[in-house]
Image (cartoon, rainbow, N blue to C red; front, top):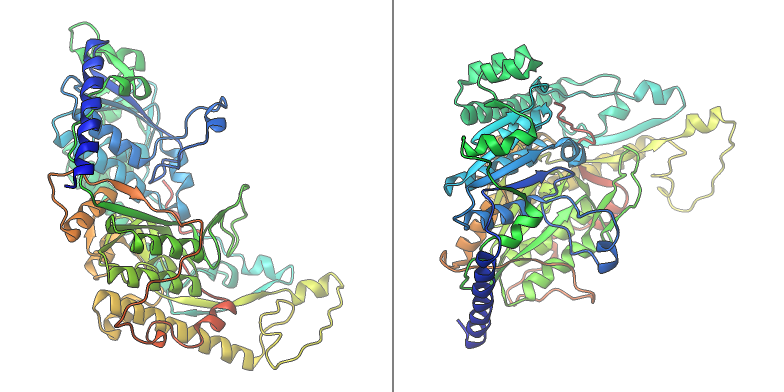
Length: 577
């Protein structure tokens, strides 16, 4: 440790020691800390709000999973606190999850609860309503408490698809797309009247995997057999009394009765909400390591240009996304991590269903470059499929949750055509052009035979490139990649079995793997720091042994992708509860 860092840590620990003494001298710590798990429950903590926003009467932003883990870690280090009470309502989190893939988010909450219990603390969950995502998280706790009037909606999982081809055709709108390969169903909603057999096969496998996860988690948490859990789900909805008698919940109490219940006949337990309690918890002493683990996040639809977030909800249409992960922004952040000598390893957090094939390849290139200098551990959030998998294929290791949706190794290209709509509206269309294929992507005209031939050729070319990237990153042969590609979506558990990921776990697991790969000591505090793009443009650092760019970026990729080649998952692959 450098003398400067030693002095900084010594001063910080003295301050923490004094603050701990003052906290013990003042009002004692509570018996239980009440934490609200509501709202969108994002994976990472949002940036600090400016002062003017904090002064507005809108309350604090919802707790993130990162902040939940930090809060539980601090509580676990305070001997006086016996445990936590979690008030859970994950309805908004389920709705906010990209593509509806919310089961992985619930699994992250379960992982946080399990780690806290392993440190000898107690977790009590209070639920006013029992939907499947709420109960799935709660079943990891020591005790589940509900009011007597509650009802239990453990009804299982479902998926549904709407097909709009005939409805659009009635208005003269058609979608002409070439997909690679048979499981690449992202445009089926618009170009088919019913579900294909391969589409049905893929969704059935996803449902089977996710339902198996749900049943196994509840069975493990409540000490029931998987067969019994399936029976109870099939018997739903249940009343609160029926659920208690079946062993799904532990007590029927109103919230005001919790204090007496937790005191076990010895008065009332002291319960304080987290914002007030954290001012009375003991701050740990730390020996900080001079190196850090950097975190680069890619969330939303992948596009060229800068990242951006639209202020209003956008319609559920192809290529519309409220959050855009721009390749310029992400590559600049990765280059910053590469240049920063303090960064020993990088966790690349991806929560994206893909997007522009070109943008995905540009980000992949920077991950590959960074991985030659420092370990890169990719962590998949709710989903990291198609372009979302492309960008992380070169990572040193890949971590996903069991229910993360990933894979979808495939691409598509084409366009909607409005020729019929223009005719119905009596709109006359004339055009002038120079160049044989100048009108190729004009939506007023359908593809001719030669145009279709060019679309198929460019789509196949980028599909081959995508598979080559996966083969390079995962150490597979072309045939091995083809067997698990073809546009098929896998759950994280299925992807692990097929070699697309290295381990199952949450963000904390990914951080731990990054520390191990970087050789950082386990007994030292290593800061985990988000890395954003710098304000000024930076160029990539050269490698003396670097090969030609042609080895990394296939000729013609730029032209092809700008013509409309997309590496995207199905738009609304949504698990419903």
